[in-house]
Image (tube, rainbow, N blue to C red; front, top):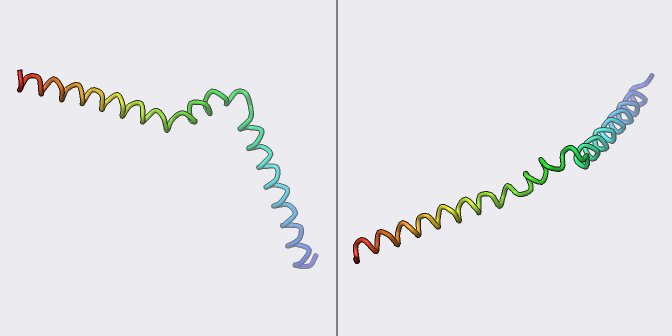
Length: 72
């Protein structure tokens, strides 16, 4: 076995393993068992916005109450 044959065989093995890994990831990501977890993960960016809106609503309400106390 020459070095060229060894390199070629190694490339073939790495390519096949990479392809099988890719297929495994695709099957895993589209499996029905993971749908709920992926839906929750997809909504994570919006969770911060809802929390920020809630907190700023509380802050605005507290500011309004403080103004009423000082003006009232």
